[in-house]
Image 1 (cartoon, one colour):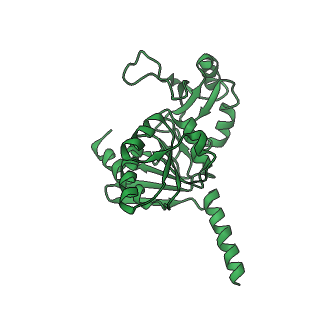
Image 2 (cartoon, helix red, strand yellow):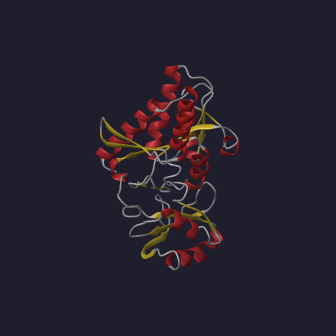
Image 3 (cartoon, one colour):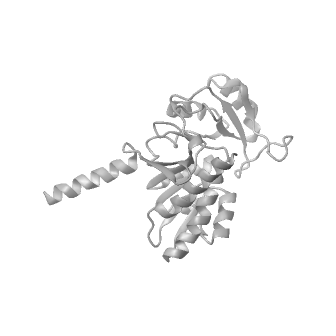
Length: 265
């Protein structure tokens, strides 16, 4: 990671912690990844500074839960969080295209992220400018979480019917020890599938997840219906806020506004 990219991650993460709307008693979905660490630590400061009460985080990974504890943010498990009304979920991404579709899973937590981000009323994505791409799959591989005993079967499927490139599609290994296979918090493995571009992420998700042994891939829920906002840090001090008016969140706001105007009229 370049120092400039890290500055962008820090700025958008810190800024998002103060820009999101929060009220006492809110539940907040908290994603995973390096940008989210900055968000979590700053959110802890914001909660204390604003005197917010009973803000509860729903972390999407063991690592994120640890950051929340360090920042003094109360948390509950995903299982309990999905029974609550999550006001907003904030998460990073490995890629975001021009149509608000995402690829996630670089940190191996996309299964849990899908659950929380989908359940939230509003889903805000925060990224540095490197993650802002025209077409998904051009700079980052598509993570596919698989059951341990189905790796060979899923690999064959990805390289066959799912159209992944043989050159570059591989089982993820630990960064600290390339001889050991990376294992998710769910105790599964990940295959990183190489594509030259993903034009129709919804269709690809349906195809990939039809294969027995696939737990979840890194697209699907991370598509334009559910992503309400993307905040991109182009450089330190400069954040581009993109509202997805076609998302469920903004369609609901428009409908409520129209209803109120009708009452007044």
